[in-house]
Length: 158
Image (tube, rainbow, N blue to C red; front, side, top):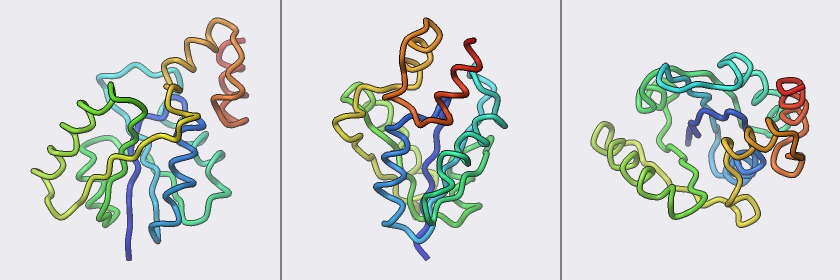
């Protein structure tokens, strides 16, 4: 069984994240969207909120399951018996960071392949931090996020 994980903080999940899930879900028998939690980061949405929002958005995508995780991505991949890790790359600025992550994964678990997935051109400029900043200042982010995320952002910033 081919299994992949797609880890990230997803604070919030954007149309770019959703696009990657839709594009790659069919390439694996099971794709886990892994909502990561790190004590080193400050989040707009709690871990439970991010998991619930991702489940809401992705409920219609066959073969996809949303799970929460705190710890090493490799440990998550092993737990779910994944042979692949998907990492999104929007622009060249993401590449250096993702490149080092991919090589770290290879050192820790050579049996698990990390794939750097290019964002679709229409989503290549959309970052969660950008979405939060625009929404925080009353801007329209409806073209950047799925409807449930837009509703949640509006509630946070009302």
